[in-house]
Image 1 (cartoon, rainbow, N blue to C red):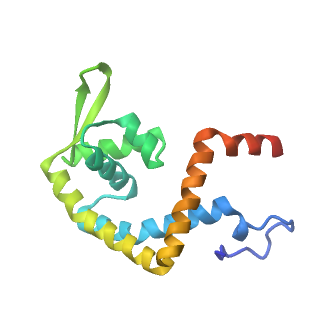
Image 2 (image 1 turned 90 degrees about the vertical axis):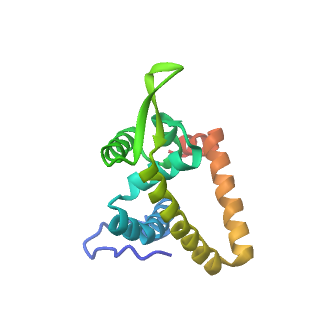
Image 3 (image 1 turned 30 degrees about the vertical axis):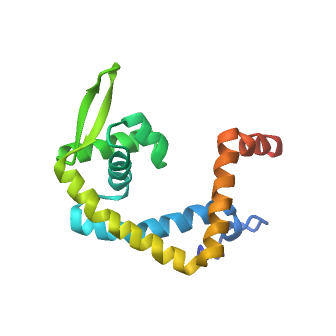
Length: 166
């Protein structure tokens, strides 16, 4: 359980934020992300949204801003702002999409690639630390559960169940 620091004057009801699974997943993910965010903010001057965008662009090479948004848990406004900061910093180039002039394709510059290449080993070290805490069986089980949640979200299963219950 995650202690959220319930206030003394909080309403008395049965809802317990400390055991609310969506909140718990979000808090754990945010805390793990924040561990590395301090490093790349101090070393490279980029925050979490910029790193998410840069990492996705680096992992895929030429991508649309829509693909970045859809695959990084950033909404379209946050993605647009992050990409604009990366372009302004000279880390990403935005070129017209040859198939659709309304869209742009994002590519890393050499400077963006250097930062990407410097941050990836830090990400791998953080993942190794998490894996060490979980152990082999724990990691396997967590990956299975996360895959199951992804499948249920993609198929609409969670939305359908939620709609029936709400």
